[in-house]
Length: 319
Image 1 (cartoon, rainbow, N blue to C red):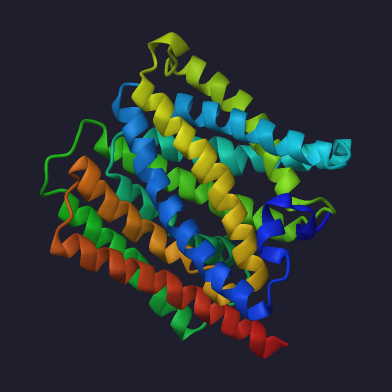
Image 2 (cartoon, rainbow, N blue to C red):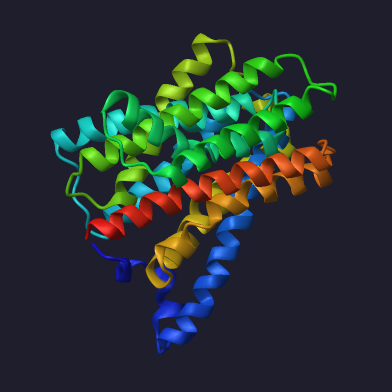
């Protein structure tokens, strides 16, 4: 199945020149960056009302997963093989149980902008894992400069946050965010090193679906679960936003972006998300946004950009 099978793109694809498609792609990139940035704030709003981040995560993943899986099944996709199910199961643990589940749990204890910034560090973590565990040293001077800037910038933000009153469990939230980022990095490496012939978007739906049951079990075991009747309408509204905008609309926009824009440009959303989360979090939730936090965030994202740029440059030189 290719992207032309997505009925969502009919409006863009019909009688559109490449130039016009490019204009819409930039709009899609803007939408993706803003929406995925605001999902951190929406998660914070949901957990601030008393519900656990684990419960928010399993509700979101279950509904979004069902929608994606049913859509592709209706489009004619076959059920995955047992081998593919094993692959999907492993990925669901790293990409959704640990990465999404723990990061959503952790956002209750730390500012949404900080949580987004920690999540943006995963390219740095991927490099370190490859160097330490796989003895793969695809690095240059620019790579190490980026690593130092990225880690230094985050340290600066964390140090600045210590001067402001933080909720109980702040350190626990940082730990959850770091574990989630590490899990996303491992999952990314697993995808790169173990490719299977399966539509990646259909696969993502199955990962969400399977992960929702595991996160539900984790919520039960840790006592982070409550009856649906006790969930406020504000929380349901935030979860609805996460499902419709974060897991579906932004997802569709991202697919369109990757089709019509170069990878270097389509990946810019990763650097914009934390900035959006910080600004919206300060405006809607009153999260602290000082000069040093802004500078630290910019240093961090610049470091991540330099790492990605150095790797892409080396790949081009090897061709």
